[in-house]
Image 1: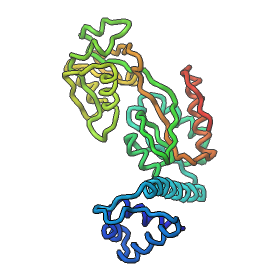
Image 2: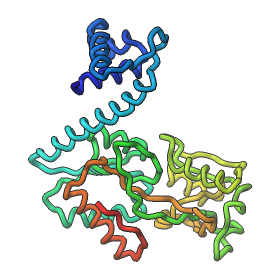
Image 3: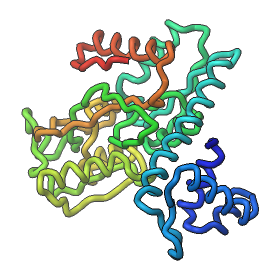
Image 4: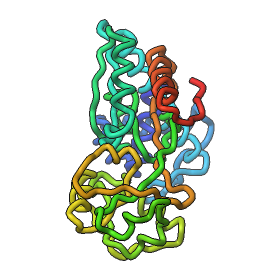
Amino acid sequence: MELRHLRYYVAVVEEQSFTKAAEKLFIAQPPLSRQIQNLEAELGTQLFERGSRPLKTTEAGQFFYQHAVKLLSNAEEIKTMTQRVGMVEKTITMGFVGSLLYGLLPKIVYLFRQQHPNLKIELIEMSTKEQIQSLKEGRIDVGFGRLRISDPAIRRVLLREEPLMVAVHSSHPFALQTVGVYLADIVEENLFIYPSQAKPNFSTQVRGLFSEHGLDPKNLKEVREIQLALGLTAAGEGICVVPRSAKTIQLPHLHFIPLLDDAAVSPIFLALRSMDESEDIRSLFDCIYQVYDLEAIKYDRAVI
């Protein structure tokens, strides 16, 4: 059994047709059918239900499909990692969500550059979902994001949980709340959430937080980005929920107050390929925790 046999089989399962799979693979349909028949003979079991239209897998066929997908993903990961190891000029490419630039990510990247002057470092802004695909395709080496997205080919490490705050205009009654407010207090407010594209994203997280507390905000409005949400808040058009690091965005009449509900946090994850244990990745983790120590931020150190 070779990798190409796994690719043939996965294509047939996903296209639910030998004809469509053959077109996708740029081969003739009869040879493809023979390859699948040979695969069944080698395995000693039937992979497809005979006569089903569209094609359906047997129980054994579905089991084989799930593991074939994992094996193909691992093979591609090994190829990508080997190519990167062999590069003359070593480069590490980091994906990140834009809101992290207002937190500690710039300090982490700067420290990493200082400690590795011969390493070329590239930064690419992209959503958490885009980071997962980019890691699998080898376009980035690590990704900094905020969402819990699972994929068998990706290892996700929780770096820390950042408290959430509510941004309001300084004339808003909430600005007088020195301790903070609860989600239930803001459910009737005009509430800006962001971003409006590439879901799931931070707006999805905020909606989920309300839902977890049995709340249904009536006046939600999605805007393109955090700067627009805070700008509209500073204009007195409404309020918005933001990570605490957004306090570094200084606008006139903008006031930040803590959100007091349990689990009112935004997790920060580092994602990497599940088989990547390179020295550069270990060094990046060291830099992350050095910055956290300097900033007196609590964390549970991951074992890499």
